[in-house]
Every structure is written in structure tokens, then in C-alpha cells.
Length: 192
Image 1: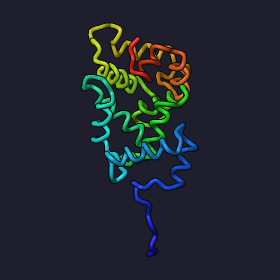
Image 2: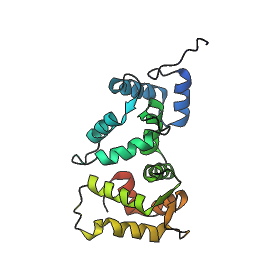
Image 3: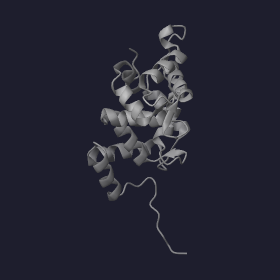
Image 4: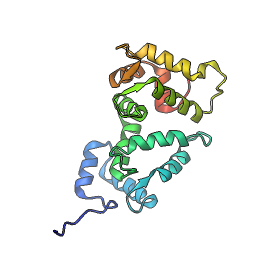
């Protein structure tokens, strides 16, 4: 039966610190500050979906419409699909989302909208992406520029190099990388 000690989720070991220093753009002091702040809201070291959505909607100025988007973001942060986000998942994802290179941020965004995790974004997933973004940004849905079906068709036509009516990771990243208005919408939540 052994007397194995398990490290509590609210403890940041030297190994954890070294890993986060090596894999984020934050220094040791900033990582410790982030960890201390994380523990204020999550004393057990686990951030569940409900609290994440609450905190995210407080940070995202979208007139109370960010909750659906926050659910997508939670999924992307919860890389091990445990139903909660630990500090390491949080900081790694936050680092990519806020400080990563454009390719890293687009890759993260691709994973955010690849709802079935099959390595492709199909029309249904693209439609959901635009619906969530347009709802969060509170656009006038009668305005033709924000017609979801039209936008989905445009993106598929423009980026789907293989012709399979889906976007692979590379098609998505390369397409959005070369499309400034869509890039601003996806990464900065700004309309063109």
C-alpha cells in the first residue's frame, strides 16, 4: 500500500516554477504573483467552469454577453478535460492567449473552435464560432455583414485549400494569419 505523498494542487513546487519559467514569458516573481492570485479565487487549486465563466465575464467588456464565449475558452484552457483548470493549465493558456506569437494564438483559437477535437473545423463549428463572437460583440444581426451563414461560406471558400468543406489546422492558421479583419475579430474581439 505504500505511503506515497501527493502534492496538493495549491502548492507550486520548484519543478513547477522551472517548468512555467521555461514555457511562458513570465519570470519567477510574476509566476508566484499569478499563483497567489489564482489561489485567492481557487484555494483548492482548481478553477471550475462556473467560476471561470463568472471571472471571465467580469474581465471581458461585452455587456454581459461573454458567458458563451467563456465556455469555449474554458474548454481550451482545460487541456486534460478534467472539468477544471489547474494553475499550470491556466498560466500556459493565458501566456499563449496574451503573449504568444500569432501562430501560437491562432493555433490556440483553432483548438477553441474545434469542438469535437477531430483536428478540423467544419461548417457547423464555424457557424458556432461566428454566432458566439457576434453575440458577444452585440452586433446588429440584421446587418448583412454579420450574416453568420454568409461569413461561414466566405471563410470556407477562401481558406479551404483541400476542398473538403472543412478547415484543417494549417488552413485555419494560414488563412486567418493573412486576413486582418478576421484576425482582429478572433484574437482581439474587434470588428472590422
